[in-house]
Image 1 (cartoon, rainbow, N blue to C red):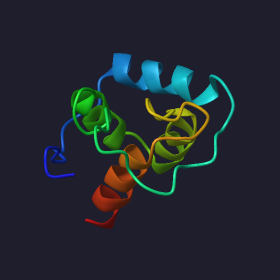
Image 2 (image 1 turned 90 degrees about the vertical axis):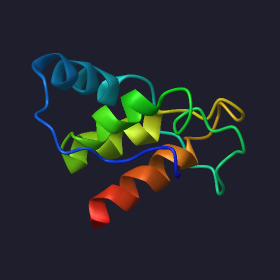
Image 3 (image 1 turned 45 degrees about the horizontal axis):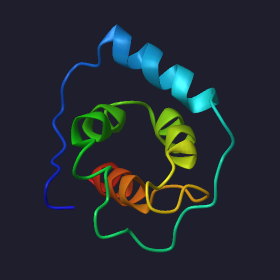
Length: 90
């Protein structure tokens, strides 16, 4: 998780619309038990993860349930769940 940091910024209208759409897409998935070694949520998609972290807790939770792991597509990403849990404790 060391590659991501949470930045408190204003949330743009386009980010709100994107995540509102994403929270209703697909079906909720069970979360992986562990984060995969090459987690895209904390590497490739870091900017999107940070933007998701600026959303309300409800939107974060619903999007995280549908954000599938790139290694195990029938499971939700553990990396994004860990990141959101960490920033929401701060």
